[in-house]
Amino acid sequence: MMFTAASTRDREVVLQPILPSEMTLSSSSVTPEYLEAVTRDTAQLALNRSPETLQYWLDGIVAIAAPESRGALKAKLMEIMAEQEGSQVTQFVTIDWIRTNPDELTSQVGGVLHTIVGSRDVRREHKVFEFHWKYTGVSLRLKGFGVVVKEGEEE
Image 1 (cartoon, rainbow, N blue to C red):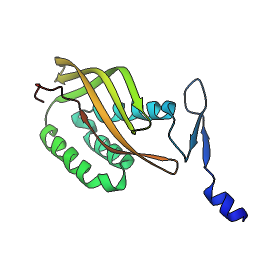
Image 2: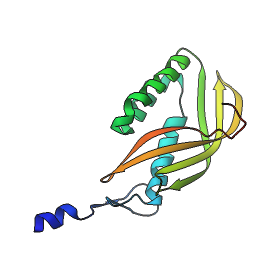
Image 3: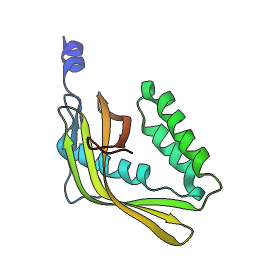
Image 4: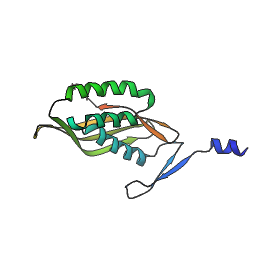
């Protein structure tokens, strides 16, 4: 009976990240605060890249991906690597807002995407990126992400 009770109880883990407060993870659901922290860190990894960091960028994103999403995600990232290898193009984002939806396991990040060629900032565009997640046990994994394109716009 104790085994059944222990195996059906929600698991909880208390995290002390570099934030002003503790976060608790439960196997029953993901908290908005945790989803925001993971989204922030994932956005920084996914949206900041340079020719010198492409392999680290690829490996980092694939490492946090849900197992069933890794193949397709890696294939898309490899296309970006092939386009950017040997170039002098660097991109980085300055985040100005994050919205999370723990019930739908989605989050959005808004910010200015800077494109640098050589040492020149050639483009600054405000973009919205959406992240899709999978939550199992106390593990939050990336299913995919991309830029949100408004109706009538082309990306």
